[in-house]
Structures are given as structure tokens and as C-alpha cells.
Amino acid sequence: MTKATDSLRIKIEAREPMSKSGVKNLRKSGYLPASMSARGEDSLSFSIKQDDLTRSLNRNGRMAVFRLALGRKTYNAMLKEVQYAPVTRECLHVTFQRIALDEVTKADVAVRPLGREDIAHRKLEFLQHLDTLPVAGLPTDIPNAIEVDVSQMEAGDNLTVQDLTLPEGITTDLEPDRVIFTVSHPRTQEEAPAEAADGAEDEAAPAAEAE
Image 1: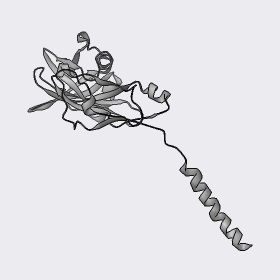
Image 2 (image 1 turned 120 degrees about the vertical axis):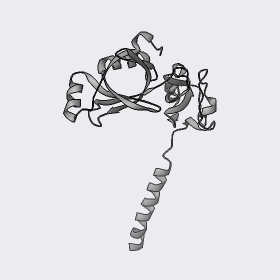
Image 3 (image 1 turned 90 degrees about the vertical axis):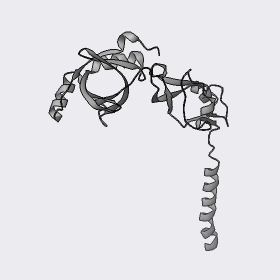
Image 4 (image 1 turned 60 degrees about the vertical axis):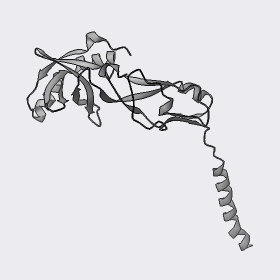
């Protein structure tokens, strides 16, 4: 997904510590409580309009570098965490990490397999062992996802970290032989009838003794 620069700038408003009822009213008004941390600095609390954040995320992706505008100040930041209510999945709080555009940043990037339907069509089982990959690079180089074509994988194939083609400037410290995807033949149920047959023989034995 291409990061659209025009939607990366989001206005934020300073926020003082609030009671639970205050936070609830804040969400009702269309805003989310948020904070931004920076190395060696105190965390900054603020509120952000939920519609603006959602719109920007849809256009730019989770790994975008946002320009958070607070008055005359603008902060470069990346989304660090989004907290949701366990049942309703309502967004409760958003945490950003302030970053410098010229400094290497670490992030966990989603790994997305492409072509799983081709594997399923051949009646093979596909298993994903790793959902995200820890990467490092300049903030603007970090992709929203690492897409991998798995359509040609056959039963017995493994795809590991060393098989990935990472974007230029992006590295990972994960072990090269760490398995990400595997493909195998479907499990058979040959053992089940055998176990049933053994049980039938055990039941027949007492009857034979009674005769």
C-alpha cells in the first residue's frame, strides 16, 4: 500500500489526566485518548480524532510515519499499540512512538502469504508459523507488510527467514533457519478404523468365553 503523504498529518489536542467518566465522554465525542513516548523524555498525553486516525490508517497502513500536529509543533511518530475492549472491540487507547526520520527504527511487520488458495486447490495443508517479522530500518523504509508468494510450495516444503526478499534497507535479526510457512499432505484417519477394530475384538472375547 502506498503511503499517502497528504493524509499523514493529523491534528491532536493536549490532554490532562482524566477520570474514567471523562475518558468515556471523550470517546463519545469521537476522540480517543492517546499518548506518545520518546526515548529520554516524558510521555505526552493527548487526544486524537478517531475518524482522522482511521482514515489515515486505511490509506497509509499501520507502519506509516504520522505527522502529529499539536499547535505549532509537529511530531514524527509511528503507531506502537492500539488497545481494544475484549468483548466489544471498541478502541480504548492509542500509543505512538516518537521517531527521527534519519535514525534506524525497529518494528514488527506482518508476513502475508499470497497464493494459499492454490495450495488448498491441490488439497494440501498450509501452516503459518510466524505472523510478524521483527525488522529494522529507517522509518520511511519500513513496509506495511512483507508479502510472500507461496503458490508454488508443495508437500514437504518449508519457507524460512533466509528465503524472504526484504525491501532495500530493511534487515531482521531473526534466525535465518526460522520456519515461517510449511506445506504438508492432509492427515489421514487410517488409525481410527484400526482402533475401532481392536475394540470390537476385545468385546467379542468375553462372549466367546461365556460359550
